[in-house]
Length: 348
Image (cartoon, rainbow, N blue to C red; front, side, top):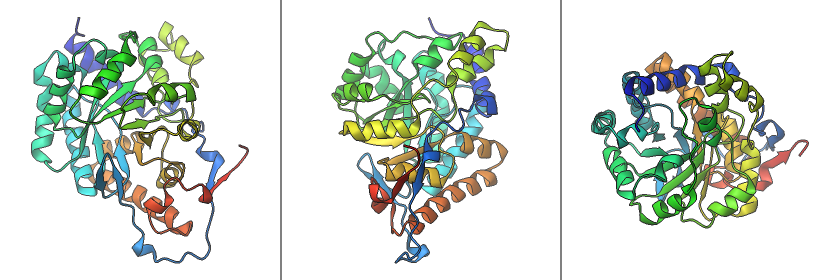
């Protein structure tokens, strides 16, 4: 049975508010604080010549950045997503939408994306659906979601901790691996599998390696923690809050997830998100093997402030990445990618 519209919209609005609350950030747990890029005092390149263009999913892009999935399906999200879409199209960032789950039972929910696609025809958009949903629907249902966006890929998000703590959650994952396999075989666009803040262990990545997945977004521990968010939504006296306190640091860090992907030698692209807060964090992730780097919270905060604040935030992140490339003595993101020679580890 589908969730009542009023309850659904209220939950999605709550998510925006709670995502910006400091108590729902697993700060300091990404592992990036243990990683340093080795400084080069004599770079043989002019800063103005630094290139941050990148390739992913078989296409060349202006940057390696992705605005990670945030919100959708309620009135307040429309203007926010239009603002994000405009900035992403202008600066060459990938744009991942919030969950399209509501569209499965309400065709009118796709109107939001039609507005965005009409306004920004050159935007690279990634669709988004939960793995607990794909086990119950057909590939043709997912194709409808792809078509409503004109999506270049479909993200399937894994969120067992969030679903089991969320009072309205659907922690029904039986058959999800086979459903994911079917989707990878049949869908007309590439499939990206991502976590939602709890990362990936090495055994899970070995299982996923058997599938025709285009990319794995590790989305590790260290940023917005959806277990904490669902507890906070329910209030400090609730059973859900008690559970969220127990599991508030649950997950595999973003850095550890990247290391797991490297040791697993994934055939798919590896993407990084989860507590990425700067272009320097992004540079570390790229040096560890990430092809695309996703951000949500800093982008959301800027977008809610103003269009100008969002533009400045994205410009700052890009410039920080350029500085990191320059000060390691390299010339491009392509040279930085998967480059162990510029990495130095502390207490690892």
